[in-house]
Amino acid sequence: MRTGLIIGEFDPPHNGHMALFKHASRKCNFLNIYVTDSDKNRSKRLKLEDRVAVISEEIGTFPEHECVITIIGEKVALPNSKHSCRSVSKMWADYLNRKFPNVTHIFSSEKYGDYLAEYMGIKSEIFDINRKAVPVSSTDIHDHPFRYWEHIPASARRFYVKKVCVYGAESTGKSRLTKFLAKEFDTTYVPEIARTIMEENGISLKELNDEHFLSFAQNQYFFIEKEIRKANKILFCDTDNIITQGYSKFYLKKLVDGISDYEIPYDLYLFLYPNVPFVQDGIRNSTDRRTEMHSIFVRELETRRNMGIDIRYRMINKHEWIERNEQAVKYVKELMES
Image (tube, rainbow, N blue to C red; front, side, top):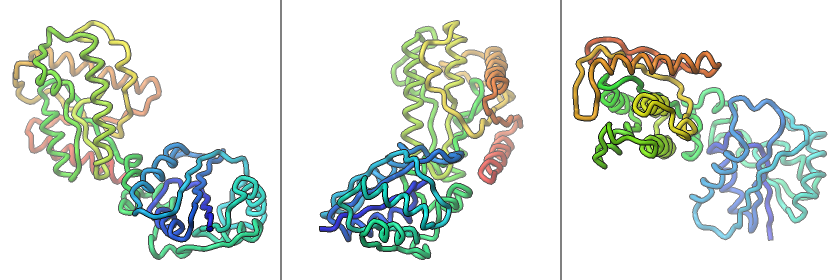
């Protein structure tokens, strides 16, 4: 009976890790994947629970086999070394022997696997140490996720997708631009959920109440969570929670309780200037109100900036649709290259 152990931060989990997990699972009856966390600087890194979730989701897609896989995530107060180190490995070996007394084999893609096995009195199997099968490291993905996109597991890509909000008042071309950009960048998008709900349920502006606005905020949030898993590097969103809050204040003269809880950060706002023809569709107000709402939405963004929130927006102010599209594409490309 073989009981295997794989240990690491897997930050983020990448396809090289998945190949290691598959390899070990074919060699073992039982396999422990020990996902660790430490106090070191975690900027630009995934939370422990997110890494565990990604690994669990990916392993769920593995082919059927007889190996029983257990995934454990814990914060461990032991030193780490950038390179394989005997002294550090000795401390970890003592800890791991107590934590996993039944382990017979340790699997790794680093030399420290041999050191751990020596000190633990078990066997070591090194896999693809030169990274020929999957030529990527976690550092590569941290620094250039889009360059190594194909090596990021599908369930982990959502943590690297750039979110762009197409933002602005009524009848400024938000829906039109959102669909154009999604096609241009070969990805998915989130439509204006409030409009969809109002149209499907026959809700007029005069009928709007607290429950409607809370529903708008909740459904938009959950739709983003769903679509971000399908996105190809970037997700475009037609309106956002800040707009929902603005309309709540405008129509109901108050901020409805709970809707701001669903506000999420965006990497870029494309702010559409109200200088294109106004089109009345039965739900919208008027041209005068459009100008008023534009000022309100500017104030909402600037208020957050003054609070220290990182808000990045670029104004789309050309009069012609083609020129507006070109402006937007330019700003999105700048974001993708930054």
